[in-house]
Each structure stands twice: as structure tokens, then as C-alpha cells.
Length: 423
Image 1 (cartoon, rainbow, N blue to C red):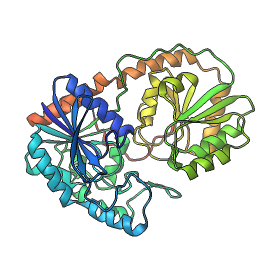
Image 2 (spheres, rainbow, N blue to C red):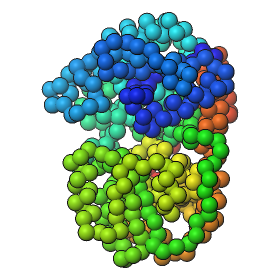
Image 3 (tube, rainbow, N blue to C red):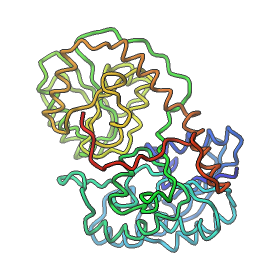
Image 4 (cartoon, rainbow, N blue to C red):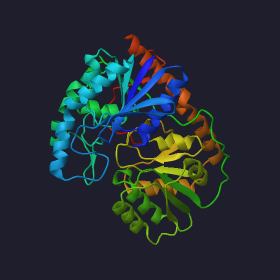
């Protein structure tokens, strides 16, 4: 197939979870013999084409008032940006010209910010089959999170979301097929009024998780039971990640019972506040950016204490490959794959008290670390790139041929309740 992948960011301008997933996917698809191109944005004023991993990457200048991935802007500028972002006809024209030249058999859209929902219209008018892959809540929320500091997870759309996301919610029936990283993300989007055709059973939806970097598991040895327990957090340092709860819970643990290493970076003022919160706690350290190959072998348990409905953080399945289980928040997509006591553990709530209770139980209990290590390594097979790529390939082939999605193309969306799961 001639495949075109589109995402808001791509190296060198972005390398977060969605970008990492897409880069691995594109490389795997090319390795399977497909002709691949990637379309993304550039903060510059001129279009250009580079080659990354042997794949042409086409950088399209953003037609808006500012580049949204830099410093925060004042409210008037944000309003102008979101007004243009609701449906951007200039970006539609630019993308139409590029897609006409690339002439793909199918286009796989990922994050659309900057291109806007007009990207769907561009492909539709050219008669190109569309597969939309969802990594976040952009279809219903201008911030892509459905979460706000001080307010928490959004139970319904605020006035800002209702106004600015109206075009993409109205146009969300355009994609021929949709893939999503978790049922929970799609539950919340349909509850917000997006993808009504899917909710009516008229738009195929498949749940396809993230991909690890390689099919071969990294070298790792079964853990030796030891005290103190070595806890770790890895990710973006952000209020949505529940780090205040983690630090508060860790401070309450008996002295010498556990060490906590926090890996990642964030905004300087927030990072400084976390350092202040942990001040005086000998067992808590901040290690900054850390390579997974160095970090995961150094810990016994990864803690993912998000107070946000995190769609499906890559760090969970990256840790599985090293045999490291996760203690995860019951919110978001992880509760769909964490098997409590086998490949990880679920916190029985989202506050510091629930996290402290869960950590205390794991520290005092003689859980079978060797057995859990083996189960984690086995579970990592579910996220091998060859398996995930095969699922995407089946969806893309079905869309290109305009035929029904086969059974092997991921798991059907369950269409269940939007209430979060608690263990």
C-alpha cells in the first residue's frame, strides 16, 4: 500500500508517546514493504521534506497565530488560536495539495492539532480512505485532556469545549475507521457527543494499544527480594500525574521501607514545587531524564498514580519488557490491562491515602516478585511492535479496500459505561 501518516509533531519537533508510537509504526510498515510518507507540522515558515528512518517526512508550516508547543500565551491570543483551530481552511488547502501529490491508498491520521478537523475534509474530498487513530481527547477538548488543574477530570463539556470542539465533533463521522489506545478514551469521547456513528454501530472502532521498541525482550534478571523496596516514577512532571500524592504517600512510609526515584522533567516552577514537597525525605530522589534501559532495572515497582484519565501511558508496557510491574491508578486506560497481582497492581482510589494504603500493603506483603517478573515479561508480548503493526496493517488494508474490518485487527470497542473502574 501507499500509506500516509499524519501527526501534529514528529522528530525533531516532538518525541512524546504518540510520536514514538507513530515513528515505530511507520518504520515497521516500511519494513513490511509498504510505501510510507509522514506529514507533520513545522514551526518554520517554509515547507520542507526530510528523511527519517528512510521515510520521507513532509513538514507543513502552521497557519495560526502562534506555535502551540512553546511558552504559554495570554488569553486573547489563545482565543484567536482556538477559533482558527476549530476549522482551519488554510491548513486544509495546504494538506489537500500535499495529499494530491502523495496519492496514498489510505491516510492514517493521528493527533490533529494544528491541522484541525479540516484534515478529514481534505482527504474526504480527494476520495482517500481515512483511518483516525486516537491518542487523546482532542476531538472533544481543545486542550486534548478533558482535565484541568484545580478542577480535575471533566464530567461534561465546558462552554469553551462546546464551542471550539463543535466542528470536530460534528465531523467525527467522516473517518472510515477509527482506532483508539483504550476503551476508556473512546467511552469519554462518545459521552461528550463525538463519533455518534460509532455509538450507533455504524463506524468500525478497534482498540489497538501502544508498541514497544523491539520484539526481543531486553536483558533482565529475576529480582532478588530485598529491603527497602525500590519504587520509581517515570514520565512528564505535571500536576495531572498525581506526583503530589505519590510524594505525600512515600513520606508516610516507615523510614527505610522504600526508596522512591522520580525520573522525568517538567516546567521549572512545578518541578521546584515538587522538590520542596519532598524536602527532608531521605528516601526520595529526583533523577531528571533517564533512559528506560538504565531506569527500569534499578526499580522493583513502577508507580503510575495519575489523577487524570490518562489514555494509555507507554511507560507501563515499556516497564513490562524489563519484568517490572506497575502500581497504577484506576483511572484511564491502564485498568483495562493491569491484572491485579499478576502483571501489576491497581490502587483502590486516586488520593494520597489510597496510594499510601496500596504501597504499605505491597511493602509488608511477601508477594511473589519472581513470579510477577515472569508474568510481566510474558505480558510484554502483547505490545511487541510486530503484533501491534499487524493489527494496524489489517485496519489500513480494510480501509484501503473499503471492506469490513477483520477479526485480527485489534479488539472491538466494547461500548460500555463511562464510569471508571476501581479494584
